[in-house]
Image (cartoon, rainbow, N blue to C red; front, side, top):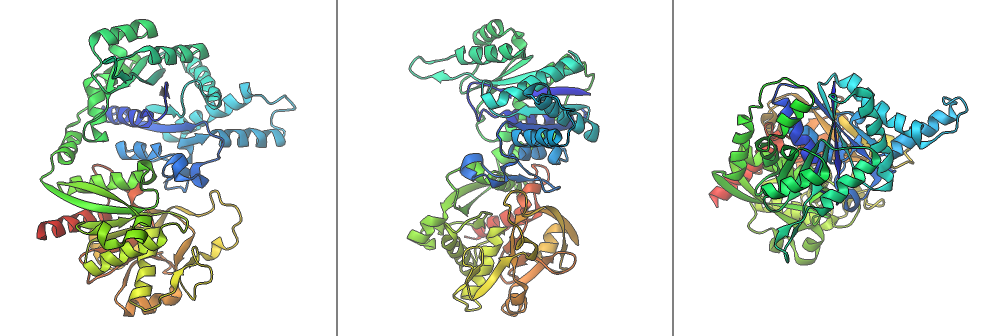
Length: 535
């Protein structure tokens, strides 16, 4: 088994996750089985309780693990089936070490970072290797080289590489080569300093991936090569992409990065055939049609807060050979200025998931505007609950209808807490989480979109539709098109008389890929395109 470790230097948010995922894509298309994992140095056990402004979206896996958003890149770019073994935090490491100490597993020894913490980190790599049976494991180390909290992880992979041998482990360092506008040139000193810091720790990178705005000319590559002690052909240019993140694998292939990796690791495999990837990219870059939709949320100024939603929209656009312009709409702005002013002219409206009362009334107004104006609507998790509340208020004439999450004393709790959640006291990892089966109702629009009777979708919520109101909603024209197999929980709602109005209690965005767009997103963009062409 071969191991690739991806580290980052100079600044955060360089795109280590995208680089790791893109390399995984290239190796998969060479016929190798690839597994990816992310090590996060923060002390939270997982990102499930973190504010989106702190961390971006929480990406949920089939087994219910709440993980880093980079795992979304891993699943979208490759065929990896990820589990909680694929994401490790310092919090999990120290929790495991302290539990072992309490259980007496260290036989009375003094518990230290080396070897106990580093051994626990290495143990996660071994566990994934054993479970995945992959040819190559790519491990991304979060944070920036030099951060105090990241040092145990770097020491762990240094030791691990020594253990498995020189042709079985490879270090890729993603760094930044800034363009100084006043000087009119790229500067290599930050990269030199970052590599020097990494070498102090005992890690000598085999490949340098240089993020830059301008072309990395031959002279600069030679300079980086000399001062950082890597072959000049191993200095890889990774420029800011012009159109889509899905250009990155092709960019790295042009730089022959996958050839370098295979040579270093003694992997005798054919070149990657990326024709299918190029076709998807063609539809993203040069689509035959164009449409504009609105995403109404409360974290709208932060791109990463709804990362998987935006990617699923792109995938669905490509499936419809349609470019999608996404207009980000602040739900609180709707409360101040009205839905008509901010949503007029859109071909579709999407309300994603979220927590907390802020912006709720604005989202309800967006759902009402979509329903009354016959604009295609897709509601995800909270977006489904919002549509339910709006329908109860304005169609069932229950003006004080609400969710008990936002108004515990509402006289009409059309959305209420799940029974098993009423006894929960801890916040972390206690929601309804992970992939669970949903039985679709034959003859509904949703069932036609899926082309299936049962689907498995990922959940992350505590509140559900209140079955007390099911009959009243049905009589008023709302259809329930998906249930849990026992029929107790409503999973999908739709309005049959509307051009497209669907809300799902689960998060379909987590199952969308460039080559396999999610059926609900594909149908939503198709309906939005039809509306746009009609207008």
